Image (cartoon, rainbow, N blue to C red):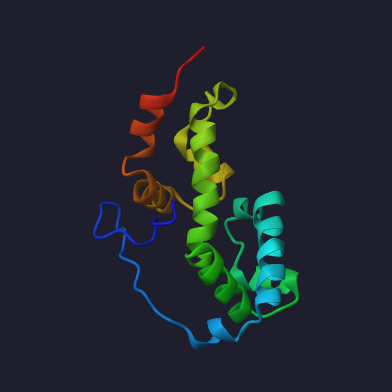
Length: 147
């Protein structure tokens, strides 16, 4: 899933990620980067902050009591993606689970997209297609089995 923001032209207004090298990435001590990495995982994954559609890198930096440059540097170097791609990856992982789990069978694709943190339908479909190479509806039809 790490290639989610690196794909060439796709439907749903998906744009190619431009590669940039930021000088400040090399300025972070390895110990600090490791510590921030663990804390970022805890906040975003364990505490499920990815579900908040308005959660920003600035919010994360504030929780970590650091600045957004350090947060961005750690995410870029340790996850090989940017902040929004990181959030979207966890959102899509949860959406995939919900789409095939019979406990969520009554939820529409749009309800699932809101529940996992997408602000609107278009951003969900674009991120989903970028990662899965198919639409959410086709994925659900292909993988959901009512029991």
